[in-house]
Image 1 (cartoon, rainbow, N blue to C red):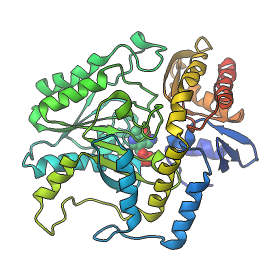
Image 2 (spheres, rainbow, N blue to C red; image 1 turned 60 degrees about the horizontal axis):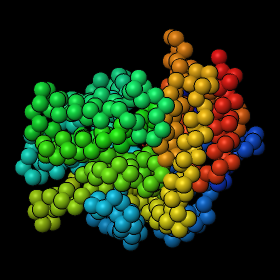
Image 3 (cartoon, rainbow, N blue to C red; image 1 turned 45 degrees about the vertical axis):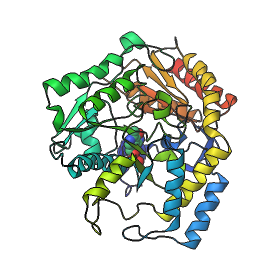
Image 4 (tube, helix red, strand yellow; image 1 turned 45 degrees about the horizontal axis):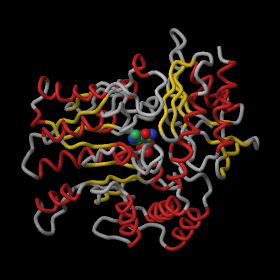
Length: 433
Ligand code: PMP
């Protein structure tokens, strides 16, 4: 076990008591002891259609046997174009240009470069600053980690981008505890953007504001009603691009296709990954308004490369095959609609945990919920971790981020599995110290 330096893992602790998954089907994993484990987290927020879906499996198998790899630098292959058309057709209306990458982190850094590049090709080279938000997570590459707002991910690397600033996060337990869906209070947190633009920055030096419409991995922070609309208005007022990171919120997670549509706010650039291939083959994408693409095209001389950026595996044929099959499956099985229909029951079951020991707040939207536990003094995160391990021992996989238990099951979940998920969490909470 020693060779694998595991990501975002307490390696020594894990290796002393490993949790190993060996197969998966539908809503369930199997571990190395043959136990069935309910997948309460869609893998890592990505297996939205459930595991081992045959149309995706077969599409990948066919593709690997037909053409394993093809470059997309000054070359192409038909699946890349077909996959992009399909994604653009289901994307929020107005985001019709697709740049492929291989992960959410790459999507974040690509989006940030695209934003800075866009201003520059239009002759606005002063716009280089980027504004993110505390508790924002945009992956782990230098751009994303800089604009992201997680101190723990940043402090080991004091060479992050110098031209970033952060808004306050939107969690306000004092006013919004146990809100169902979008919290009532906090739209005014968005006004901090305008205040900062006018007091700390010259607004004409800011390229973009990047946020997750709903911050997932830092504890499920649902945006207060009206907050995102207000951000959009302020960005428009000062000519700043708005970037939504929909790596978690895309592909039905919030009970609708995209957070942008759910909240009625269209960003200029949007990132996605995870559910794009149902987690089967790594892939991410950056979607942009046509005006952004056209600006790059117009600025470069004929024959010149307009955007000097891309990855060996951009639009990898296996990922494209997986994505096409995934998007078809979402449509054919009406998986986002099912998520929307299941959401009220999921909400009811999540909020039934209120009153159990240590439950400080419950937040939910669509098929995602965060259950925040009181932290043990001097040991932040310990109680959450113990709850996570105990759920695993009882056959349910949840995630913990600090002392927040996050659940985000595959969107094909049924009522009985929703009960198993929250019932197990309830049993665990009753035994916690
Ligand atoms: N953005 C968001 C909102 C995410 O939740 C994640 C991953 N959890 C990422 C970016 C990074 O994605 P990846 O791990 O695929 O690089």
